[in-house]
Amino acid sequence: MTIIRMLGIDPSLTHTGYAVCEVCTETRKIIRVLEMSTIKTEKTKNKQVRSSSDKMHRARAHAVKLREVIAQHQIRVGAAEVPSGGQSANAASAFGIAIGILASLTIPLIEVSPAEVKMASVGSKTADKEDIMRWALALTERTDSPVEWGVGPRKNEFEIEHRGGYILKDMEHQADAISGVQAAIASEQFRQLAGMMAALIS
Image (cartoon, rainbow, N blue to C red; front, side, top):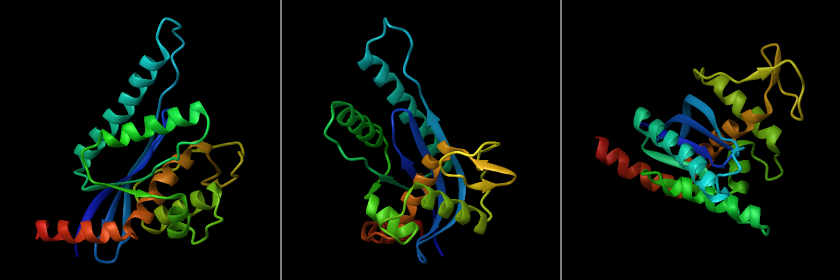
């Protein structure tokens, strides 16, 4: 049985969620989630700094942290749900920044669509954010993964109870990263990559 480590990424300029998953290449299942977190950056309040410079600085912070995680965990392959360009200027900018963050990484990357993510995790094309968060929570508990879900005392739009509180809304980015890995390992691209990696490891 060959176990590799994959990095799930939910890229964004403000919140990039990531999850380090151990995956069995034969069964194509997530064995454990070793680490998950959200990289956060905020727009500068310094009016002397150009907007483009600020965005570049923030995007670099996301890329640097992801590269550190890749090196620390010896990641073999990544998975990401790449956002669409959208019609507005802001959406197009966000798309370009997310693509740039992913392009800066030095590992093979499997791109997955929103529909593939929903089907691979929840099993429904109509699944919403809360469905995916509940699925990801159940997976980490079922696999005894050494990760913690942030909770608070107040309900939010998801209202997912956990350990005496409610899972924080921004945990959705980490759940998206895990579900991205789930979709990637169900793909033909992963089957081909896994075969090559197994041959190299053996």
